[in-house]
Length: 335
Image 1 (spheres, one colour):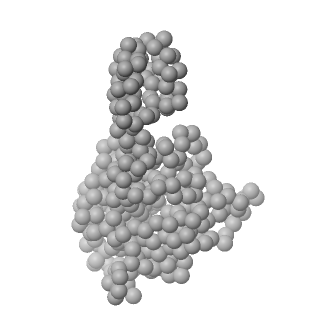
Image 2 (cartoon, rainbow, N blue to C red; image 1 turned 90 degrees about the vertical axis):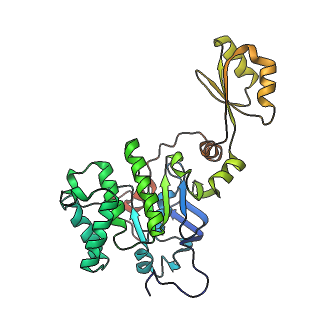
Image 3 (cartoon, rainbow, N blue to C red; image 1 turned 120 degrees about the horizontal axis):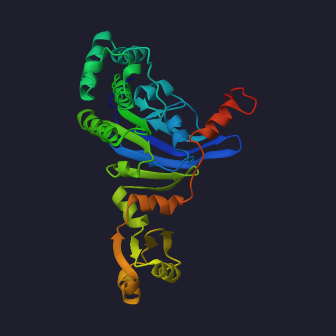
């Protein structure tokens, strides 16, 4: 049965993850992950380096098997029916995967050939997708001549040549300039509307998930929060107060007075609001020490920092997987 045929009974979720766990040696990469992505949703996985995002994406894409739990893509179990699950998927990974020895059009044609798309159909789809991502003038150019942003756009087009219904984007805009990042999301939005795509994205850019239907914040292999962005802001966000002191003496006094609420100290002091009436009480006591004051409403960034902490994460993304796969002796470890 084609993954695009409608089955009788309730329509399956686009993605369903139930009780998934994954280890690399003694390291727990994922623990009891549960989430459901409905058909047509835009769903974001947000987390610091080493959180488990890429491990989960690799399981969704049938690259790795979960050690426990179940994953289904449009109703197909990724372990028991991986071929059917893959046909429903279009994937853009963090690392470039285009063949730069081929032309733009040849990359799309080869992808369609692998998925068994008839020749005439894959050429028509390739032309439509190149038009969408504004690469038609470059269709006969070697991929190695393209900019990073153009290559990313081509990867998105390639992922959809076989009529995938779920688009997985793993850090799709990392390393791109602001203009290219904005254009990528314009293309994704157009694709969602025109093709009723389900989109799952992982990203470090918190502002990119504001438009998502649901956001899952993951850290240390666990789901910390999962809901619509507005709900997360209300429930877990933090109102911040930014204070510019009149002078150094005023700054020291304010830091001493607000020490339990201080988030950061620099040219301005950032403190966590104590709730209703906090600013009024602060001004009553210390207005003479304050040059400027502004209130920052709860944001997804404050939600993220509240849940995951403010410590830097220097672990390279995916390092645990590479350590497990290649081991200390240099030989690949396969399951």
